[in-house]
Length: 220
Image (tube, rainbow, N blue to C red; front, side):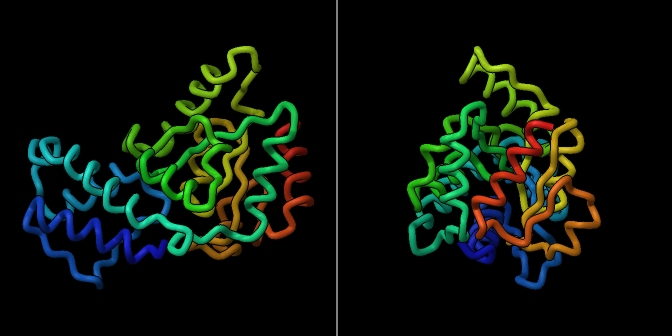
């Protein structure tokens, strides 16, 4: 889904809720932020009082989740090369458990995955609907992993966060987890490299070799 679509939907909701009109030239980045954080920062930028924010946050989330989910189709959601194969390899590997950590609302996260039938790989996760602060999502996902597989010995130092923004690297580092960056999003490899991820991929097209590197990182 094009980032401009999500941006337009958020701006439209803000106009309806608060009468705020954001121009397309607004220099505000959504990259790597939770949807709750985006709401809070745009509301503060617009001078919306905190008590008014609290009243309308749920309505914002419900409408954003509904409108974005409706846009998630096989045509609008791009499945990057190698990702499906990488997920299959991970799902088939004993001792590896897949979970989601994303700033998207939970309903939107799974709508995106269902567009290409990849949702079955992620039975749990932590989402933008859980908290404003992205750095608090990885430990929440880890707690849910333990609930999903009580017999497994999950530990932060053997957990890998994979993402395409500096904030993904930051949230891994904040929780003593391994950080893997992929330059298929809004940030170039050179930009991501400045944040010192444990592994940096240009892309995941070579799924087999990429998975072997990830597996070795988990076992360190």
